[in-house]
Image 1 (cartoon, rainbow, N blue to C red):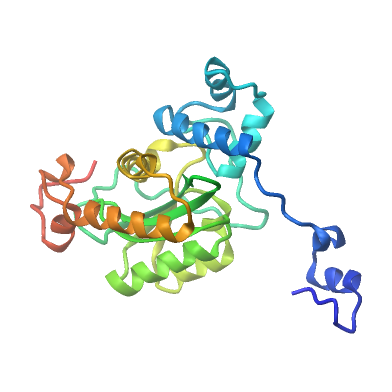
Image 2: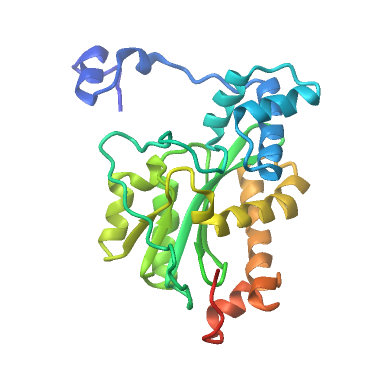
Length: 276
C-alpha cells in the first residue's frame, strides 16, 4: 500500500492510511528458537490443562526446567491466541467499536444438523514456526464443515472458511463464536447478517459456551498435530486435510452412538437424540 515511488511522501501516505510512520519501516522479526520451543510446550500444556492461566503455566514450565517469567508467558499466550478457559471478570474485550451479541444457546435443545454452527481458531505448531487453524463445526453432528490455515490472526481466513461452509452446506439458524476481534469485526458480521443468520457469542471467559469446538481442538492435536512436525504450511494443509477427512467420514463418536459425523450430518438422526 505504501509506495516509495509515489508523488506523496511516505509520511503523508502513512497519515492518509491512518497508520504510524514507524510501522512503515518496521520489519517483522522471526520468533526465536527459544520462544518457539516455549510456545510449542505452552500449547501442549494448555491442551492438557485448559484452565491454566499464565501464572500456573509459568509454574509448570519452571518445574520442567524452563527459565521464564510470567509476563513473558502471558505475552506468548497472547501471540498464540489462547487464554485460560474459565469464567473470570470483565477481561475479554472485543476491538473498539465492535458489537457483542448475546449467547443464544443456553437451554436451547439442539436437535438437528444446520441448526447451530460454531467457529473458533487454534494455534498449530510446526517444526519451525507456527500457524493458525480456523474451523466451522456443525454443533449437533460435530462435523467439520470447512477450515482454513493462516500465518496471521487477520480476519480474512475466517471469512473464507465461513463462506465455503455456506456455499457447500446452506445456511444455519444460529452461528456461535467467541468474542474475538475476528468474529466481532464488521466484515465478518456482514457475512452472517447478509444471510439473516442469528449471531450468538460466548460469555466472557465462559469455556462451556463453545465446549464442542474445544473438544475438537484437543482431538485434532492429540491424534494429528502432536504426532507430526510439519515443515511447511503446504505440508500442514495436506496432512490436516487427510486427518479431517478421516475425522468426518471414518472416526466414530460415542456421543453420536458410534456414528461418524458424516453419517450423523447426512442422515436424519432419531428425534430424541439431543446434543448436550
